[in-house]
Structure formats: C-alpha cells, structure tokens
Amino acid sequence: MPRARILISACLIGEPVRYDGRARTLAQSIIAEWQAAGRLVPICPELVAGLGVPRPAAEISNHQTGSDVLAGAARVVTEGGIDVTELYMVGAAAAVAAARAGGCGFALLADGSPSCGSSFIYDGSFGRHRHLGIGVTTALLRANGIRVFADSDVDALAAAVK
Ligand code: SF4
Image (cartoon, rainbow, N blue to C red; front, side):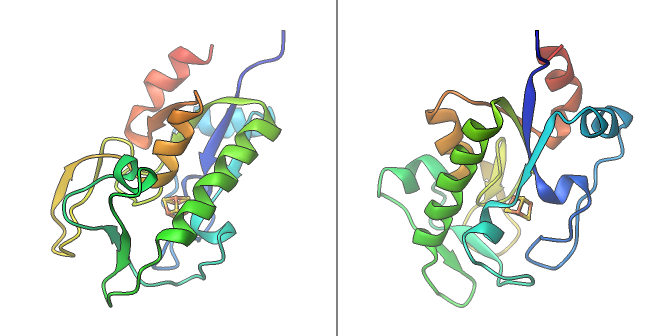
C-alpha cells in the first residue's frame, strides 16, 4: 500500500519564500526522510497566488480567522491597508488542488501565517498579538477533508501517517 503523502509549507523545507524573504526550515530528521521518499508536496500558497518575495506582511483583520474569510465575513489586509483577500483565496484554492493532485490526505503547515496558520494567527493589529485561529489555506484544506498539522506537531503527524 502506498505511504501517505503530505502537503507541506514550502518555507518549512528551506525555500526562502516567506514575506521577509527567509525560510523557516524544520530540523527534524523525519522531514528529510519523507522528502527523500517522495512523500512531500511543497507549496507556498502566497507565492503561487502571485504575491512576490519579499512582500508586505498581511493579517486577517479584527481578530477574525481564515474560516471567516472563506465565509466572506473577514478580509486579509496588509499593514499598508491593501486588501489582498482575493489573492489569499487563490492561494488556498491552489493548495487544495495541489493536495488533490498529489494524493495528500495530510498537510504540515507553518503556524502563525494568515495562509498556513493552524493553531494561532495574528489579530490584525500588526502589533504581534497572537490569537487562536487558522489561516485561509488551512481553513479551505480542512473544509476539503485534509488533516492539517502545525509545524510544532511533527510528532503527531508522524504518528498519524505511519
Ligand atoms: Fe510559508 Fe505558508 Fe507563508 Fe508561504 S504562505 S511562506 S508556505 S507560511
């Protein structure tokens, strides 16, 4: 039986695609093992949506979440006040398409991001205030039945995909 494949935030495997032009590489050896076995499907939703690197930081406004964005009840806005909601929706849809094409039932995403956050995001004040919530890509992946794990939960993911 084929081993489960995992959609992964590209920044977690060393790709310098974050808004600040950096990566957020995970050090656990299991990540390299999955990668060598062809089990990882990397994507940066913001990059595939056409947002450049570097790009302005963005947050989901007014303490809301990616689920609110999908429902049309919240917006994703840059610190300069530019509404980038539609691009974040495009990125989320691309992630779902990549998961389907790659046969991924699981995803490992970088927490805190307005796209990839899965346990916390920032509250829209640009004051580095965290709150419980998920990003737009995580919300759409979960709505499509994909189990999303935060980068702090690699061990839990490893147990789930055995
Ligand atoms: Fe990483 Fe996701 Fe941000 Fe892209 S959108 S840099 S994959 S956290």
